[in-house]
Length: 468
Image (cartoon, helix red, strand yellow):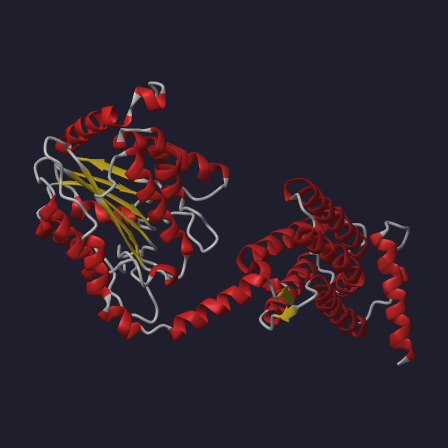
């Protein structure tokens, strides 16, 4: 037992010399299988201990980090084993294991200090980034030195081993990310999520569904008929995924923009799935959408007026828009269902905007000469920006926040939105979503005429100094 303790002390002292780039050699380490096991346990304990300190004051243990850690160690030792076989020197397996593990407790301290700064220091664009980069480079230099000494100062195997470790570590972080950490802080967001789940469970789903005809009728009665001698724009917003706030926020903002910019006040309605609006705003489900479209179809002058429908939610690879408000069992919206609803309502002029992954799959079923369809993504691509903390999806932000408040041409705004989204995704290094835009020949002419009709009603020189 005394030898085990003494060997461990020697190896840790030599690990310190490695970390501080002090002179040392492989022959000064106590290299044996016992030390490999002891140092591996010290590495695990140091990762758990430092992770606990960083996650204070309310650390929560993540048991799933243990298999991730074990897998990382397995890959590391497998790489070292392969290197030892390639250079036909079995002895380097123990040497590399012991010498690299002798410095990992100290590198763990440095890395977790970096985690602490990322979590607690403001200004991540400056301090955190450069400090993190410095920590990464310093750790690689220390690890490279350990490998170089353990491999008998042979440059080729040292470089190959270091490169293999860098690649494998990068892949592990890419696939596992924060699941490599044993502790995470219990934050306010987690409490808010628990509160929300409790509110969902307490919801009287049966009463909510039975009240829908009353809530929908009340909302529809606020709509006004079309105006004679005007080509009006009607708007229906459809935010159908209750668990993420971004969709409800988005249709609320979109309706406000169109009411002001495109004169849809009295001609606009939102259907929303969200806890905060469940008692006052009609649910976003297929039944309410079909009823709303039929009601608007009766208010419109079918030859003059245009309907814009904005659907925002999650989308699936088989091109179904998610309609979700747990614990209600709601059916998704397919392209064919949406087309049938519009046809049954007798609506001729249609502008259909869909912000969802794979939403390009809706285009084929919806297009005709009197229809414009714009989607946030191609049929085989995902779109971006959803989430509880987001204010807008990428598509919704580009169209309703950045462009339509300053445009009277809907087509021009949608064309510019594609460029805006492509640029944003390129900066963020995201796989392009490839927003789609289909414009029927007749609807293009109709929307140009609609814009020209709205512009003089909105551009009042006394109020806007002649600018709009």
